[in-house]
Length: 386
Ligand code: HMG
Image (cartoon, rainbow, N blue to C red; front, side, top):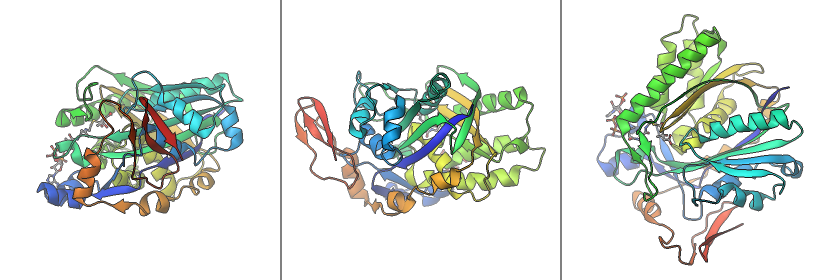
């Protein structure tokens, strides 16, 4: 029985910052961002977009009425949670009218959360093959104005419907994992912005990649020719490019050209959206599937998931028949091409705008065009609507 991703979509807010403008404002050579980090733009979330609305705006694009009735598991992976107790997934369930018989919860382990959710969905569908699971990764990456991490921010969500007989990719449940308690990136409860030991986090990402990649290749007696593409968690493209090059150093089968070509397609969307934490790997999957013209049914795609703190997992996705049709419905012109470019002053105002710290009643006035929005706060409760 094949199980995997049957439908997939992403959402990103309708505002962005050009990183060349950011470089000029911060007195940095733009090539540091464009070449040094291989990033171009980053999405900026307005006040009416949070983890819940971005998740609903992503999932709304793929769910039919039948899907909503058949969903038995809904997991929202995020590290930009809005509540210490209640799962953001419950708001999404209500907004999208998803079955009240679904098991609904939120999951967290930095950028690894969505992969953890995906493995739970795999187990769930194995045991409930007539049901579907909805996995949503939704995050706003915030490091703060004038910080080294500022250029690696972003906002967005990816929604994936998991079922038997998937039309996009299947998963085989085989993976290599490495986990360790390290302080490379974290956000204490009192902080609105993440704390990162930037260069240490880069080292750890690459170290964890080498551990799980080598273990996976050895265990399954593989060489690189097994893969048609390699996907990575993408905090910014250059770090994934370094991991790809570590893998290519082991190439004895002439696979480097093909894997490098595929990589350039897989970073396309992420270079414009920025880091969307736990959704980044899966946005890269969408990018690969949409832009790589050489992919075909049966191709094997390697995936490296990394979440600071840290947990890493290396696994394989197999391309299933029908993926082109599913991906052709994703409208990048609407989602990315039509975003409004912000000036530095507008971006800084948007970054500093916040809901009242004490939870007092508040109405969000400037509304974006997104289908689902945060309307305000009343009696310490977030009010959502369309
Ligand atoms: P930095 O220290 O300002 O940058 O911040 P740098 O000095 O290391 O320069 C970056 C690159 O630009 C270097 O390339 C420079 O040489 C190059 P490299 O040597 O590494 O190949 N450069 C130039 N290139 C061309 N022309 C120029 C030029 N100048 C310099 N003129 C850093 C970079 C990523 C550390 C910072 O942005 C940061 O702290 N970001 C946040 C942390 C992060 O993204 N870590 C990634 C690994 S951890 C992870 O992926 C998990 C995460 O997603 C969170 C989660 O799991 O939830 C973050």
